[in-house]
Image (cartoon, rainbow, N blue to C red; front, side, top):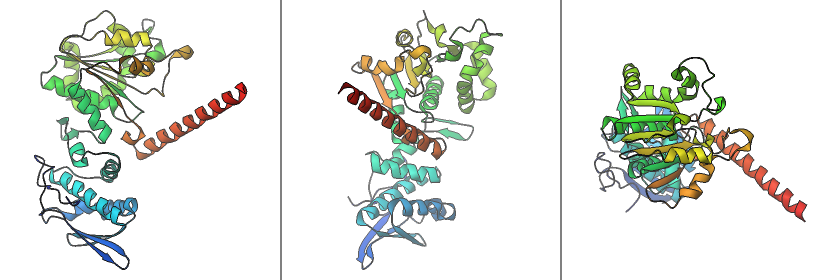
Length: 360
């Protein structure tokens, strides 16, 4: 099937095909290969081109092609493979627009990344809604994020491991709220190890809530994005939502609950085992963390670093490893994460070389 001949009539059957929507026509001229793509008349061209043709400039830069627009006809000239990719990307852009979801420069760049690295259609990834509240919709923004969300749907225990900004905790909380609203669970339990206080919170002034507030503030912020803020105190008082330090999980059995352990890189192997064995009937657990950000004192081993070696072959447990490509904060964050990864890798290689020379 030629690229671009994908039905974009709606969200119910994004993958069906037709020859009536985007029509690519390819010819060869002296200057190279030319491909003309006709956008459906029902689609506002501004939503395809972007403000000031911003989205088109992204395609031109990333695909190394010249682009010209006349009416609803877009002409690309350049390498044949790039032109096939251009038709595919435009098809995905139009498919997303047809769902009523607007595009952004970031979304266009993510579509390009997904087309290069994955076998799933970006339109299917970027239109998978988890929660909609007060005019805001929470959905995966990368292919790995979609896989992570799918794993949460399909498994009882899921580990989301990756750098800051990859949405691992935020998406897990969105799935927890979704499960609570659908009455799949009776409560949400959010927990973190309070490493900075050594989990010895008794010496701190105030109530448990006061003591824990600095450590769980990011979880509160996420809840405010997903639930009516006025209802959060009531849900906390009723125990429908519980936020507590990891030490308070000891000795409990957590039934009919969606349980999230955040900052799991700061657990010891013993704490990780303790947490996982709290799992009760009708419950689901998601464990999130970044193994490059361990704050444990005295060179302690991280429970998150060893858990995959221990549990990798157990059914109904899944591991999702997110990367700098999944960072959904400012684009510089992804570049910063990648730069640190390269630095750490180079330093590790250098240390191994030094050790080898010393042995000789």
